[in-house]
Structure formats: structure tokens, C-alpha cells
Image (tube, helix red, strand yellow):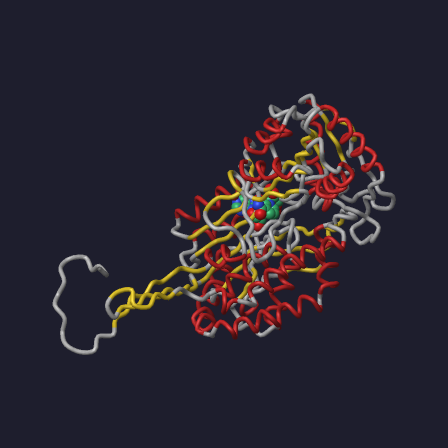
Length: 497
Ligand code: NAD
């Protein structure tokens, strides 16, 4: 059976005997095994990363950018095979896998402009003969811990800015779909990066804890579920590291009575069921305003669901594929039962979905609930599956309150033709990323990504200038070049006055 090993300098094989199973979610069969590393593997990776870092940081930014330009080319050349590999372990359809890679690639493109982005500030003549300038310097060795649902995009969000800024990087990807991260590291080396600049270690909690406690790692970026994000944040900060930790989500789609209903339905269907709902920017909650809007929305959603094509991830006709593991499938189905038990109206039941020839695959059919209320745990918690819940609101204020009060604050969307209402909504809602007639408002690579409340712990968003700020520290230099003659000692705090 294929063994997925660490991608570290010297090819250290894990002395650990622990392994994780990698499934083909379409068939339910185990297709590979991944090593689950330990402290010894991490120690070796950190030593190699520390050894590589000074020379990498000393290389001028334009030369680092050239490596990134070549890396971008290599990702483009390998797009099809990367997408197939990603899809085979994750279960998302091939075109969606290409989108996953493309959104990460766009962060690499942004980082190709690193010489410009790292420029500091300069104040000439801040005092008599005195100039002040700032520079951004790398932190040293950084680490990234990533979730299963975007095995290309999220590692690229993290390591592209980190290495562009002159750090070396250790990636600990999800143990459920680890092959694409390894392949990206191979391509980065092929692009001309020195050994040790980017390494991949595989593992589970044991490896995460080793990363959080390791004194040789200066900063940790995490994306995953909220309880673990909070744990990672607390433990990493306690160990003196800089930490950003993005968590889970429960994003709402507000549908105003004046919305273009066909467009809103098409957008909500794609955002609720695409990638089997396994996106942190999915739209699992629809909030129609007023009973009339609710009835129209429900009817149109039911008709649209009836035409959805769920299939194996390599089927070009399929709109979404299986969820990632059998455990996750069971979890999603348990949440559907919880929704029923709590009194929500199950309009379309996706449980028991079976695809001929793939009866052991991890498929869940599209599921729709109506009359979901805020007291229900199935509303409060993230399900992360193809389950859409309708929560009816009586007016705009009630609709605004729902995402504002929810424990998560990642993304939200409003569908309307009313510019004033949309503007008001965007300004007042307590959520980090807002879409106006845009269902999945993942910011472009030259802005940055981050939620509010339990969707993100720590400071600084992912990628864009925020990402570069996370991966660098600012140094301020105040300089004077006297033209001779000793000055007097000053015993008061220096001022420029
Ligand atoms: P997860 O929290 O199970 O795993 C994320 C990472 O944490 C993995 O690398 C995993 O190995 C590690 N991990 C798992 N259990 C751990 C433990 N007990 N202690 C320490 N580390 C542990 O998340 P997932 O299921 O892989 O991904 C889905 C979750 O990620 C969802 O909640 C989703 O909303 C969230 N997500 C958030 C964003 C965002 O940007 N806010 C983006 C994508 C996914």
C-alpha cells in the first residue's frame, strides 16, 4: 500500500509506528497510509529549517520572488494532476479541486510582488540631522497546521507569504488528505527553493502539540475547527509564539423580499451544497425575510435540490461528491437526526443516499430543513455537510440579529436590490466577511481573509498585507550621522522639538 511520508530534509523516516488511513471517499476503501510523526521528526525538521533560514532571508527579496514565479508556473503546469490527486483524497469534484488550487495560486501571485510589499517607511529629517526608517524582518521558523477541506489553498495561504518574507516553514497538513501538500513542497523545491525552506511533517495531535511547544518555532498559523483553534491559540501563546488560529463557521444568507430570487436560489444552492458543504465559507443557513419570501424561497430551493447531481468526484457531471470520511458522514447524519429531534421541519432528507456501484462511498444527499430556530443546537453548531437550514425572520432587524448574535462570525451574504439596506447590513453585522449578492465572499489575494468571534483567535488575517504583517516583525531605525565634534550628554528623554 502507498505510504505517504514526511517531506523533510534528509528524508527522515518517522521512527514512529503510528499511521493514519487515507480513504478514497468515493468507494470507502483505504487507498494509502500516512505516517504520523513525533517529536524526533519535528526536531529534525526544525534543525534543518533553522539552518536554512539565515541564507534564505539574506537572499534579496527579488531573488526569492523569482523562486515564487517559477513555483507559480509549476503549479499551473501540474494543475490537472494536482486536482485529480486532491479530489481522490478529499472527494470534491475535479473542477472544484482546481478552484481550491487556483485560490492558493493567487496568493503565490501576490507574493511574487514581495519586494514591493516589504518596503518600509522612511522619514527624512525627523530631527536635526536625524532620519527614521522601518524595515520588516522575518520571524525565523514558522509553522502551519491546516484542515482537510482545502488541502492546497490553505497551505498556500500560509507558506507563500511566510517564505516570501524570508522565513522558513514547516507545514503540518490534515492527516486526512496529505498528498497534495507533499506535492506542493516537491514543486517548490523544483522551483529552486533551497532545501529546508519548506518542509512537511505529518501527524495528528501529538505532532500539533510538539509544534506548539517547540522553542525553535517562532509563529504558528492554524486553520480548523473552533475548539481546536482556541486550544492551539492558548497553548502556542503560552509558549511565547505569535499565533493566528482560524476556526469554524455557520454563515447566513439573508434573502430580502426584493431580491432576485432565481439568482439568490442558484447562489445559495451552490454555496450550501458545493463541496458537500465542507467549506468554512459555505452558506448553511438561509434567512428569508417575511412569510411570503420564505414560501417562495422554500419552493424554489426544493425544485433546485431535485435537479442536483451528486456523483463520484471524478464525474464531470457531478455537482458535488462524497464527504471526506465515514466518521464525518455519520456525524453529518447524526446532526440531521438532532435537527429532527429538536423540532425542525425536515423538508428534504439526504440520509441513506446511495450511488449505484459506490454503495460504500461517503455520500450524503442534499438536505433541507425549514422552521429552524435559534434555540436548536443544530442551528448553533457547525454541521459541515450538505445541510441547508431555513430560519424565517419577520423583518430586516431580526435577520441582522441572527448572524450578529451567532457564536461564529466568518462570512455572511445578503441578497437584495436595495442598496441602502445592503449598506446598512454590511456596516452593522458582526461578521468578518460580507457578500452583497455574492454567496462566498472569500476575499481576493491582495485583501485578506479572517472571521470574527469564535471563527478566529489572535491577530492578523490570512494572506495579503495582513499575512505579511503576521509573518514579519517591524524594526525602526533612528539614525544620525554627526559631522564631527562631541555632543553633550542628554539626561532627558530625547525629543525632536
Ligand atoms: P480539525 O480542527 O479537525 O483539524 C485541523 C487541524 O488540527 C488538522 O491538521 C488536525 O490534524 C489538527 N487536530 C485535530 N485534532 C486535534 C487536537 N485534538 N489537538 C490538536 N490538533 C488537532 O478541522 P478539519 O475537520 O480538518 O477542518 C474542518 C474545520 O475547519 C471546520 O470547522 C471548518 O469551518 C474549519 N475551517 C475554517 C476555515 C477558516 O478560515 N476559518 C477554513 C477552512 C476550514
